[in-house]
Amino acid sequence: MMAHCSAALEMASGKFFAKRTLLGRIIGPRMRHVLTDVELAHALLQPLLFVREIPAADRGDESGCAKHPHPFFGNITPLEWSTGMCKHIDHHLKQFEV
Image (cartoon, rainbow, N blue to C red; front, top):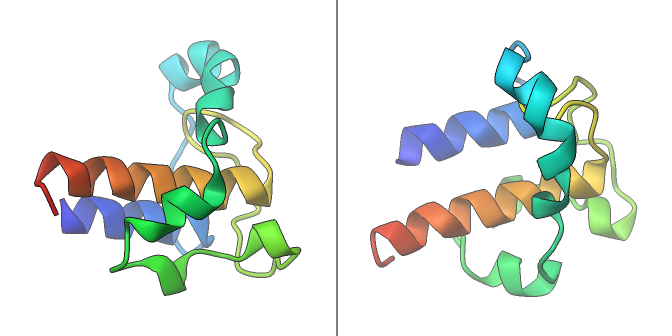
């Protein structure tokens, strides 16, 4: 789980590039809303292990965000990258009751 979340953060910061998947090209744009449908402040409280790695896109700092398309959602904004990563890590931490 930690390696999976670390790889996702590397993708969000532009350090790792994953090719778009066919399923992502078909369904991803319709599912993109799931990246930002929660309050960012709440999402940031849970994944304490990685909070410093998440770009501060909600405060206008887009320098640490990936410029390439997400492999499933396609072209997403820096805010969608950062909020999506918070939600992703929170999801996995909750799986293990962390």
